[in-house]
Image (cartoon, rainbow, N blue to C red; front, side):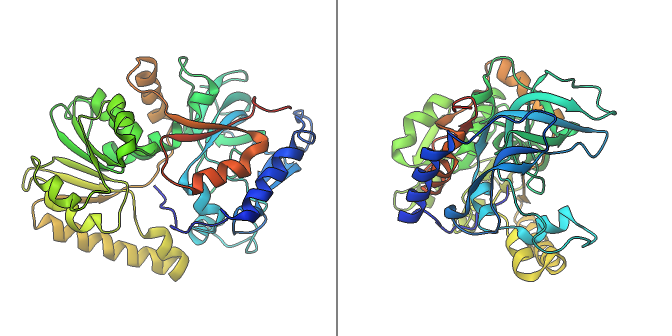
Length: 397
């Protein structure tokens, strides 16, 4: 997962005034675009910064299918993730600019006006000539990669291999809460951690930071596969995580958290959503020489790319990762980094789990499309208990 920069920006009086102003005036201005129009309503930023830079426009460029494997989706609901707060502030700009324009053909700042938002649940409006799995009218969901224009708009274009049919058991509002966090957790647990349904039963797993979007999905997936799950969170989230299936919940705010965890039986796997000082002691909780694995979603890659440039950032990140892998391998445990990975086929697997009742979305709060600035302010407040959803149907369109 792309890790937030850790700065709390835009939560003051100016941010609140801006949010209230938008909420009061947008409902009279938002209109639905027809497919023949060249513009659509969207929330954009014109430069990186705080919450006051979020701007509603009715004249955002209508997305176009450029490649035969692309799909145009009418957005019914989206949701916010920490990456949206971070991207608004400029986090990862260098690496994402390189991904968008690897030959440096475009001028710096060509990504603006930039539409944020990664999750989408909606209906297919149009498909490229090579798309066979989807047709207009299909209900789908997806997590759009951060180098593409986002989902806080009326329409979004994604590659067909990033899209899947929406779970029948979920509304669009519910479905929009899952794709990005689910794919991030899957990347950590399955793609990088090697866990799967066939080898998970009985494994002892520790999740550091269990009450956010990634943590709540990971708890449910691991329990569906038969693991024993211990999770850390604040005390007021204990009932919440217990209800999701966590076997043991520990208050991360208590003194000597490390000692409390060391008093438990050692773990086979650790998923770290927190980073920072926890990495220094968490690997000591793993069973040595047993294939035990630590995976962190808090990596320095984007920060290194922003501060050093993409090439030097990649080199520094590679050296850092390589040295940590070797260091911990000598101590008998595996060390891994993980990031969000878009994947329609993975969403198909998650759809099966949802429709079987083994995974449910955790929605903390729903905002209308006119309340997007308020939703960002809520996200910046931290202490998430699930996802913040933007419901386009909950508006006076």
